[in-house]
Amino acid sequence: MTPRTVGVEEEFLLVGATTGEPVPLGPRLAADAADPDIRTEFKQEQVEITSRPCSSMAELARDLDRLRRRVGELAAARDGLVVASGTWPGAHDPVPTESERFTRIAHEFGHLAEHQLTCGTHVHVSVSSPEEGIVALDGIRPWLSVLTALTANSPFWQGRDTGHASFRSVVLSQLPTAGPTQVWNDVDTYRRAATQIIDVGGAFDEGMLYYDARLSARYPTVEVRVTDVCPDPGVAVAVAALCRALVTTMAEGSGRRSDLPTSTLRAAAWRAARHGLADRLVDPATGDLVTAALAVESLLRATRESLEAVGDLALVRETVDRVVREGGAARRQRGEVDPAAPAPGLRSFLVGGRGD
Image (spheres, rainbow, N blue to C red):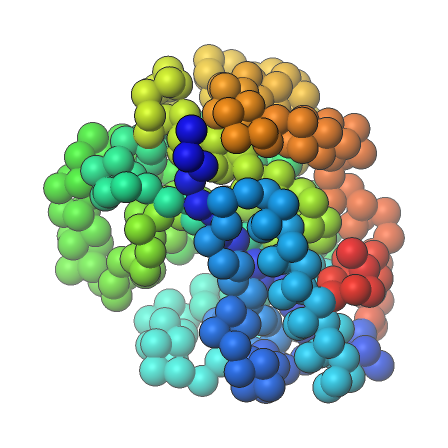
């Protein structure tokens, strides 16, 4: 089997090394980098890195390490730190990045956009055509909530413990195009739905279709968007491997499609965001409530053949078992962060050679 290529986009928070609070360094870091793989994001307290398309997980790990270290160096040169958290734990009013597009988004979506300081990981998996992409999207949709649970890393919002493991997911779910989607069946249905959403003002273009997974507006890929940013780059790589295996399994017809209704998928997504790995999740194969460990095991069973075919099974198995055993990043955040402190602190969530 020729492996599909995988690319990863990671969004990070930028924090003052002295103050311990978010700082609007993003545009300056992007200018300093002069590298298209290091970019600004919606808020100036963020920076995004974009890996190359990679055929192996070892190649992807090297590229993410290179980019993480580079943004860490750029931030340090401006007395800043780079933090991998899906939300900032403390109270903060983020600064919008100045661009025509971001200004329009801020105007149209008001308060939803004003406080939208969230960081995720987006995984792009290559497909041969939009038609193949639609087959993959229809097949992977029930399994995405398990990825949310594995990567949940945003328990705090505006200085409070939200009771959720991934409050980033909850914040994003308020946007009109976010969340699980229907079964598309064909490209025409997907495109017609996109056109209707744009026509009624729910999005400006296909780049604002914030579905859990979508056809990328820029690349010949399926883009999976459900995961919080991962402090451990090894977890990011394992998630990318799982995304590739899901797309491969469903696009190439070796997986059984689970036609759970969108309403059930919304409930499954909420449970994953609410509990992470700390409570029961929806088993995508059956729709039943099971332990988090069993839901993860169901995902591994569904993707095992595709993982084995490209040599990723051992890496994914070891990483996922560790994450389940330790309880995930949200649990770790709760153990070390006081969100009400003047500088809430996320020292073990630093990236760029300081924390990973």
